[in-house]
Image (tube, rainbow, N blue to C red):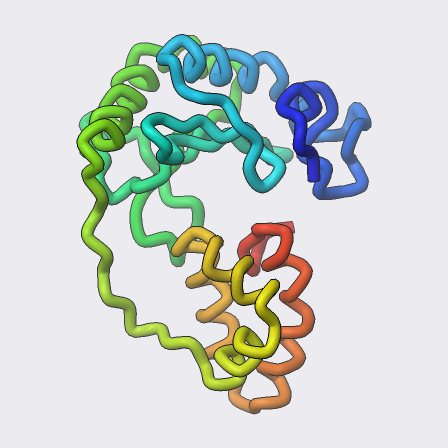
Length: 206
């Protein structure tokens, strides 16, 4: 994965073999991604690279992260449970995501069209960071299977990476592991998922 911010906008995230090619998703959405970047910078957010993507912070807290796929690009909010979403713009990343947390774009021109609303939503998130307001954590019915607990205990690197994942990404693995009926299936899946977890990805991410 990339570690320099400029590499993302010129080459991509570095997670697949389309990196630094014209086929990279960041190239298709380059104008829109750059516009999102400038909006974030104009609000004095701190620009960093996390998980191979541009992440914008304030008061030591992650505010949003930018991502690009083949069919769309996204501005995803951390602590999305706090967002009021008066315009109804936020969408869920997937069926197992607890809260709508992203603004999705399918046309580069949509960023400037939605700029006032994007700025409004970012300003709201900045206030929460300034006041150190955090969402209430919901109890989940999903539990770590014993096999996974043992694997984490035996592999500190894996444990550290897993607990650094977002709640949604953690949930994607637990859903998959808990759906396995046989212990050997779970053990096989844990081994298969190790590299993805270390890379900061969810179970369904490529």
